[in-house]
Amino acid sequence: MSEGISEVIKGAKSFSRSIKVLQLIADQGQPPSLGDLLESSELTRPTLYRVLSALEAEGLILRNGNKRYKLGSRLVSLAHRALAQTDIRDAARGTLEQLRDTLGETVHLAICNRNELVYIDKIESLELVRMSSSIGTRVPFHSSAVGKAFLAALDSTKAHALIDSLPMSPMTEHSGTSKESLKSYLKQVKSQGYSFESEENEKGIVCFGAAILNANRQPEASVSVSVPKFRLKEDHNDYTVSLMAACEAISRELGWIE
Amino acid sequence: MSEGISEVIKGAKSFSRSIKVLQLIADQGQPPSLGDLLESSELTRPTLYRVLSALEAEGLILRNGNKRYKLGSRLVSLAHRALAQTDIRDAARGTLEQLRDTLGETVHLAICNRNELVYIDKIESLELVRMSSSIGTRVPFHSSAVGKAFLAALDSTKAHALIDSLPMSPMTEHSGTSKESLKSYLKQVKSQGYSFESEENEKGIVCFGAAILNANRQPEASVSVSVPKFRLKEDHNDYTVSLMAACEAISRELGWIE
DNA sequence: TCATTTAATTTCATATTATGGACATTAAAC
DNA sequence: GTTTAATGTCCATAATATGAAATTAAATGA
Image (cartoon, rainbow over all chains, first blue to last red; front, side, top):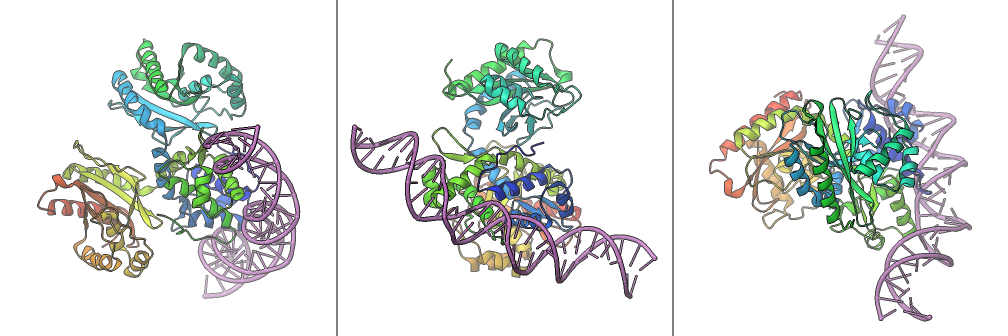
C-alpha cells in the first residue's frame, strides 16, 4: 500500500532502505521470517540481515522465539510522543466531543500521513454497535470522507497532483477507483462544504467529512462522523450542519479567517 | 533519558545516528530548531541536515511553519500496527477488565522497551479522578511497580545487570535512587509475589505491580493497579490478591506452568 | 542415524554512500 | 543598509554499507 512513495534523500539511501523493511514488517498479516522478507524486499541476504539487526537493536522490531519479526514497543512510545506534540488534538478535542454528543455517533480526527491519512483522535459514540477503527488506523484519500474533505480543501493543483499519485485500490466493492470522477466530486465537496461516502471505505459504514483549515487557509486535518448504515437518518442535514459548524469553530481556533 | 543505550550494529552506524536524532526530537519539551538539535547532537550541520531531511521524507518527523521539528504521523500508524501485533494485549484484556471491575481502579499493562517499560494497554477506572498516563507512556524500572515486578521476575543475574545499566533518575522526591536497595527490595517482591511503590513514580499515585510469565518462566509483561493515594484502602490484601490472581491467570494462558 | 538440503549467520574486499570543511543563501537584528 | 545569525548546499574523500562467498545451524528425507 505504502510502497515506494517516500522520496529518497541523497546520502540517506540506506536509511530509506531500513525504513522500507520496517514498513514491510508492519504490513505483513503474519509475523514474517527472514526468508519471507528476503522474498518481498529487494535486499540481499546479508544486507537484510544487517538491516533487521539494526532495527532490532533500536527496539523498533523484535524477533520472537521462532525467529519471526514483529514491530517493537519503541514505536509505541515514540507515537505517544508524536501525539503529545500534535497541537490540533488538544485544540479540537472539546468541540469534537460536543459533536459526538450532538449527533450520538463516532467522530474521527485525521491528518495526512504521506499519501494517506491516519486517525489521531477518536471520540466514540456511546451506542453499542461501534467502529472497529482506532487511533493509528490509516485510511486512503480516495475512499474515505476525511480524505475527500482534505483533498477538496487543497489548492486544486495540489489535489490533482496528489490524486494522480494515488494507487486508488478499492477498499470495498463500493469504492470508486476513477481519478477523474474523484476530481469531479471534489468540486461538489468544495461547494457544499462536506464530503460523503457510503460503504466505500468499510462495509456497513457511512461517513460525512469536512476539513479543518489553518491560518494559511490550508487543510490541517479533517473530521468525520461515522455512522453504521442501519442507524443513518434520512435527513443528512443533521450530520452535515453540525459537522461543518464544528470544523469551522476549530478552524477559527487555528487562526483561519473566512 | 534513553541516551546511548542502543547497541550500534556494524554496517548500520548511520541508521543508528538517525534514530538517535529522532529520539532527540521526541524528548524535547518544545519543538527544536535545527540550531537546537545541532547543540544537542554530536553531528555536524550538513550531516544533521541530511538526517533531518531523510526523517522528514519518511514522514517520521515534520517541520512546521517556523522551521521547528516535531514527530510525524507515520509513527502513529506504525505504532498502531505494533500494538496490533502484540499478542499479549488480546490475551490479557478480559482478565484485566475484570481486575479493574473488582478493584474499581485503573489497570496498566506494560512491556519492556529497551531500558524502561512502556504501557501497551490501560483499563481505566470509572472514578472521576483518573490517571494521566496513557498507552505509550514510558515508566522507569526503578520507580514503577511494573518495573520492579518485571525485574523481580527476571533471573537475578539479568536483573542485576539491567539495574547496573539504569540511570536511576528520581521521578519524584519519593523515588529511591540506590541500586543496592532496589536489588534488595526485589528479594521481597519475589517472595511476596507483588511489588509496591508509593509516589515514587508520580505524585499522589500508589501502585501495586506483578509480572506475567511465559512458557519459559520469563517475564513477558507486567501489570499494575494504580490508585490515587486518597482512595487507597488500609488493607492492601484486596489489591494484591486480585492482582496476583489475574497475573497468574494470564501467565497460564501464555503457557506458564508453576 | 546419517546425508542432503535449506535456512540463518558471518566474513571481508571494495563499491558506494555518507561525511564534514568550506562556502552560499536567506532571514533576522540593529 | 550593514552585520550577525540561521539555514542550506557542494563535493573530495573517508568511512560505511554492500553482497559474493563461506560457514554454521536447522530441517528434511531415506
